[in-house]
Amino acid sequence: MFPTHTPISAILYALAGFGCWVTGDTFMKLASDLHVPAYQIMALGSIGGSVTILSVTAARGKLAALRPHRIGGLVALGSMFLINYVLYLISLPHMPLANFYSIIFMSPILVAIMATVFFDEQLSWKMAIASLVGFGGVLVAVNPMALMQDQVNWVAHAAAFASMFVFTMQMLTLRFLTRHETRECMAFYPRLFPLVFGVGGLAIWGLFPMPIEGWIYCFLT
Image 1 (cartoon, rainbow, N blue to C red):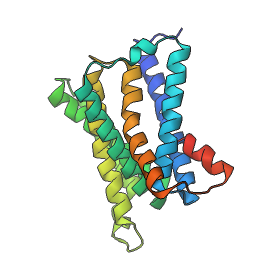
Image 2: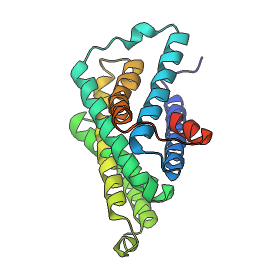
Image 3: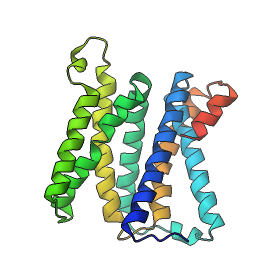
């Protein structure tokens, strides 16, 4: 059993989580390249994620952990999850993954700053320097001068920046909810929001035909 309350274990879990996140977004981009409608990606991806969480929770004998305590907080988290899902589907198909993540990974800088306001955490000079260096790296990767060129998709870039802000608020909301909700609740219930909207899209516009790899991409997003 891995320890869960040490800095090293937290870093390892964070790396694993970001790895899964990047992999899922890659599959989302691959599904978009097959011209699968956004609502269908949202529906199938949410089904895949929800079923996975339920299965793992049941296998661990912890279904009781899915009992919510702060409905309002989970609704807020689910709403942000849905908004972010839509922003991802707007930006990912129209910009390189490297540029997308250069923007998205500005969020840890904002989280570190905003945590000093909302959670009274201290921002040491080392963390401040690291944040500035990280921001400089983002500027180099995104290349603001290139954004002035005509071929740049401004809508995709705007959606990516908006997603970064929404993701920051998600992280702060998660920090608050960890005091009241289990990890299972915070992972499961927010996914119901894009699931409802995605299934609604399927009911209105129908199922878009796609090859077997399209199904795989969608379920793995």
